[in-house]
Amino acid sequence: MDRVDILIIGQGPAGLSAAIYAGRAGMKTRILGCDPKVAGDYTIDNYFGFPEPLTGKELIERGVRQAKKFGVGRFLQIAVAVGEGALAARAVIGHVKKVCRATPKQIAGS
Image (tube, rainbow, N blue to C red):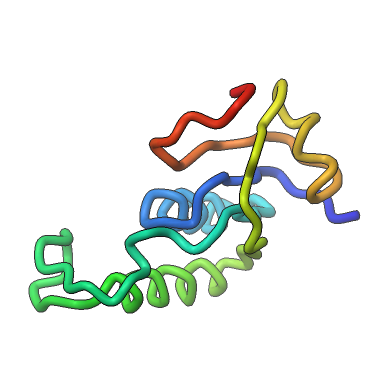
């Protein structure tokens, strides 16, 4: 099983941003979650740092490429529950030092 420093729940812009910063800091980082709603084909024209409109799919693809540059791995699975600390994540990935939820939805047990 894999050993990581941080497991981020949520693969949207917030989760990818957190993963990029953690990866840049040298932490072994993984992201868990399904494709985010923002990954659809609708146009985003109000996202900081992008003066030209882009699709949600393009935004997520750019974030994934940047995260990969820092060694971040992804698991395309739905997180159904997160228990106390990092113990619940072991069933998914192995040993995890820290779990970070980057999604606005409440996850059972968190």
